[in-house]
Image (cartoon, rainbow, N blue to C red):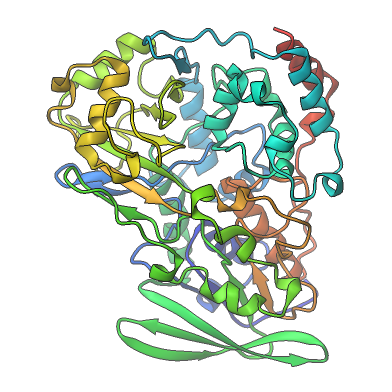
Length: 524
């Protein structure tokens, strides 16, 4: 290490901040008691959430796809974190073992309006689609600029089986960034040849809060890290010294009291700039989620303040200015009998935890559901089952409910789902469906230019780093746990002068075997 720091403050308690704290302890040899995490909500974990109980109903805003063929920084971290189930194993060990026992192989990836499983061995490409895919995947990011996916493909491409599977696996919309779509094609080229079965997808034993956040949080607490919740950072004090941006204080509001944390010369600040789950809201079986915006929560405010007249800190308005293009909705269903799971297993040919997303391709909402291995929560009773779903077009009128999903309560969402499956209402008679609205959930996919996202350690910053989905990391892809963890590792290593190499992004797209398999798949 070329630099020794006495303390570090992390603004925001998402997976990026938790990872940064772990890297500071493990690789920077900083004592845990010198690290403080400040989180505005009652729980740590950020977007990797999972809460509730059998009586009130469980709720997940979403779940991130994992893979052991990529996610180099994530597994580098979790190879160091003990499992809560068995202290002799790491989180990585138990995840690998779990997936060896429960290998994904979806049998019902797409379902049409006739409740028929759509054949997906073919991607449905025309020669024009193949040419357009090749053109985009070889284009320079400078040439792509702020263009949208629709600018690179003909309308027919968005009706292919490939688009329905790829877009719902990763939550892409046609108007999203062509740069991000290209990065996904390259980063996940291994998945191209198996997208119909989702065989490359790996799952945690429980939801990602219980399986990733909780063990990491437990380990950090044991190291003495100060985990402060219900504490909102409202502003940073700073000054310019020798043309360097230096944070000198942190203004906080916690439990009705305001306070100022003084940041000394040898101390560091890591901040989450922006949040994809900012202003999200939950509904119930009888009420739709409230329609909140960033003005209701202030999650973007601090980044907007810092970036004003400071282009090296990025341009948050590029990402948070159009809810209609960055929003979708999810729902979590808690069941107290096995009727729905039994019928889904019979229909799909998959036991829970083996199949992946089931997408109703003719759904006006473009609805998908997934049945995870049970139990999906640590505190879930044996006689309770939980599944999750989401819709990419929640502003459209349903096929079976004459309302947009955005205006639907949990009971109406279940009615729409049973309509697509042709299930009797009795299969969900004892269900509790909690809908969730997320206005900025794919805001990081918005079309952007170079410089719209700051570097993890911005130019001219002495002691401030950004950790989030809204920093620039060459070759990697947002909307993944890996992106936040990699940003954390980059920021920590740079500010602490750690000389250990950061795991490189695996260049699967340069493998001749992977290219050949993808080519063969595109011609099926």
